[in-house]
Image (tube, rainbow over all chains, first blue to last red; front, top):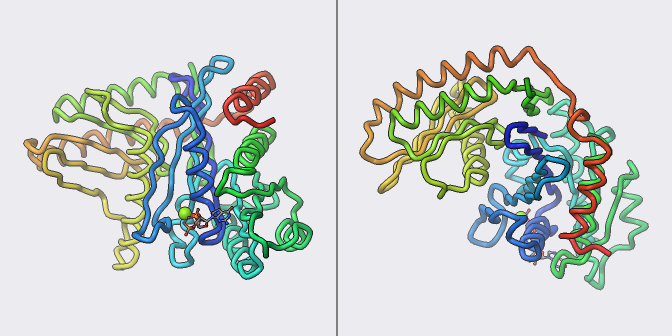
Length: 190
Length: 172
Ligand SMILES: Nc1nc2c(ncn2[C@@H]2O[C@H](COP(=O)(O)OP(=O)(O)OP(=O)(O)O)[C@@H](O)[C@H]2O)c(=O)[nH]1
Ligand SMILES: [Mg+2]
């Protein structure tokens, strides 16, 4: 969080974390496509040729004066591919909250677990821990016929009982609900 | 004094007084005019722009700073790979019409300068070096102060924010 009292801005950083191809970039693309241009900046995407996130995606949401302050939310996605570990570490720095985008396909469950472990490791490196940090889970790709049951995903991933949402980022279902809930969580913790 | 605060990467919250903030802007404006640069930005390593000075409003400061912080991070990793103990001190991009010069200010901050191709690189380095020293002095003073976010985020703000978000997010 960064408070700029002169320009009356409060900036928050939200990081979308999760396994490769889970739908993090798709979340940001949907948010970008739906919001009025007056409340969002440009979507900055650093992608490889095959549409994978190379470095990060970045989107700023900016709202008008609220009680004399202008809230700003900086949304980042991390690159989910394993070999981009150092980028993840850097993007996570200074985050106020995390959205963990899990992939509902059974074949991706191990990736979900590995990535969550990776997140906790990077948290600890920054002297933080998931059990004290504001984060929410988004179970994405609920449209796929072979998607796992919510109960079993909850049992595997949500051992800390954080807020969670079902989503189909591709058509926007659950995307704003997830964003709203992570912002609420930041406010509760601030 | 109005506090200005940011959380540094080690989780500490930093407080800038209004005077300090104005001093930073003055330093940036001074550098910009001496180099006839288009833009000078002082930002933290997380990609938050703290202050900037710009001649025309045609650069997206927010995106520029996020990308600069990313570039810095990547360069720091490259330094590690080639077993360079210190980080590289500056990064320089040469364009057809404009150049970008970026450098560290203490460990937690960076400065970005966008300037015309015609400006001599030696001059950029010397003037930037002086500017960095001035900024680092301000940061030393700053290191002593702290503040709490709750002073800024009161109950009323939180509930009004919720209403504003609902308006745009279209959640029923
Ligand atoms: N069926 C289905 N496909 C989805 C959904 N969300 C995203 N996808 C698809 O999944 C693929 C990967 O989505 P991305 O958003 O690029 O994934 P990512 O998490 O950003 O991946 P990395 O950048 O590699 O970490 C794309 O082809 C998306 O169209 C969804 O809800 N349902
Ligand atoms: Mg991506």
